Length: 91
Image 1 (spheres, one colour):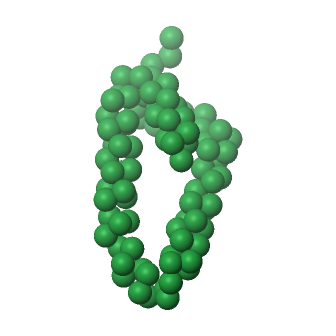
Image 2 (cartoon, helix red, strand yellow):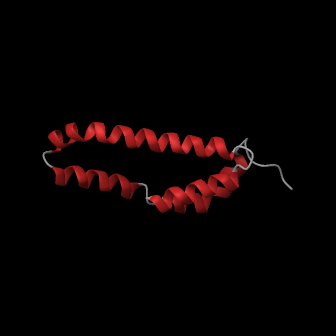
Image 3 (cartoon, helix red, strand yellow):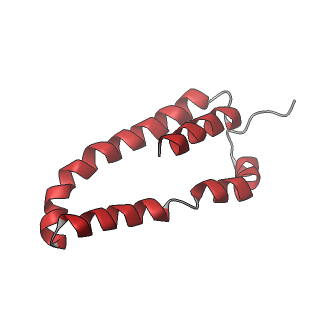
């Protein structure tokens, strides 16, 4: 996960040169919010799912669902950046 986040931060810095700090800050805020809220929910999830094995299986499944994101960005990133109103000027 650390490698994914480091790569994502580098990608944002390269894509949005002028607005890189804002893009990276938004990413850090999102990561911090998820890191702060997931531990608050684990007790309720543990009770509802019936055990730690199911809880960790569910969390691992969520992580696996995010696995294709770097490949999607690699495949469609250029089109997405071209549509962005924050794209850097040519030159």
